[in-house]
Image 1 (cartoon, rainbow, N blue to C red):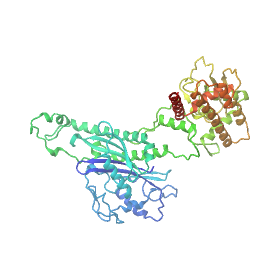
Image 2 (image 1 turned 180 degrees about the horizontal axis):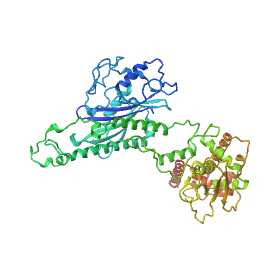
Image 3 (image 1 turned 120 degrees about the horizontal axis):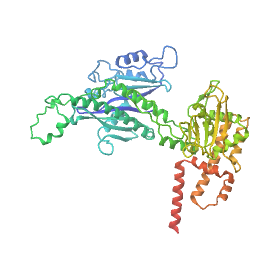
Image 4 (image 1 turned 135 degrees about the horizontal axis):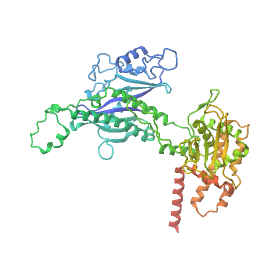
Length: 589
């Protein structure tokens, strides 16, 4: 993620200040760098240097102790003097650069690690990235952009609505773009009994912030809520303590205007505007926690937001997946120490698995190819009649129930069946606690202990007979249809096409997956055409329309059901076009 996350504070003495920043540093060639000097610099100034030295690990592995450029840290090391009270004795760095940021006057309220001193280090070995928290970004240009963003977030950029708490987006191409979340923390000894803070995410990529706007706002609000809970706890505790003569309480301040002038002898010395974030929250490790929160936000964003190279227009399956991701964002919550592993409840629909699996030979197989291989393995264990019945039940939108006591096995079988349908037609629950109706789920997995309703005439029930202790092994289990609906009409044309492809042993799995995907797109296009024409004219002759799309009467259940695989965006577009067309006709007539 090409962004920097920072927490800023409006100090009553020194004005807006950047309190702490977390910045990612990508892998850099360190062969010609002074690694030993960087190690000493890190160990001297860091409360927690992560995994130790910046040099590569001694065991010769590819993992490094630091993936960034150590010269950035050395560049800002003072030539003489030390950091005292958040202010460096030297105004020039080792390479002669101006260090005006470190020369700002600061108090305890606007100081975290002290100048350019590194704070915390977290390494992401898979991405070859190090996340470093310090008071300022080490890159000169980034430091200037973050300072400007922090100034605006605490002064002129105010969130809409009552009060100033909330998120706001601002920026331009020259100074970068910022997503700011301003908030207050209660302080019993501050003017107005509160301090202003802001969390900002700064990036030169506008689309990165806008495409993940909801995710960022949710995460920043979670961090703010935890800080406010800690500050409120300290505030209430201080209010319960015995009051000194000069201390002003909020209850007294609300009635002060009713008293005669000079009646209340208030001493200005009771105000302490230099209380640090550690004091306000009562947590000495608050910056360590903020570092972990910031690292998690940047890492999660890079995992959930992956750029895909499109070779053409987005397919309906891609649009459906994007709509489902927007409607059901699985954003883990942030706990007091790190990040919770709990996700939202699983919806009644489930997309294809995204994690690749390893086969028995240890080779990593893509998930979509594994599902096709599983479907082909299932077809070998079924008779031709049972295979035709199962395929017909699936493609026409009727419900299929898989009964097994092993949830991983039933999930694998149902995902294999799901390769026959567009993404929008898949409503899958791999291991339900009770029976779900067709309108909620068309592919359902149940254990043998679940009692089924007696009137399931149109539902097909497939019983899985396990013959091995391996929960994922499809070769040692057999499928038996224990209940099958009575079919009175001939099977759709699509069923014969799928049989021809799957039962052809000469087709390898990659080729079979490509042909099945092409077949799904072909029938999905037929469903699109029927949807368009029926919305334009509700009195259209369906027999003529089915001849246009080269389908027979037995194919109508497939065409109607597969309209559920169309995205909401496409359906809304068709309705808008038809509405404008009808309005123009009415106006002309």
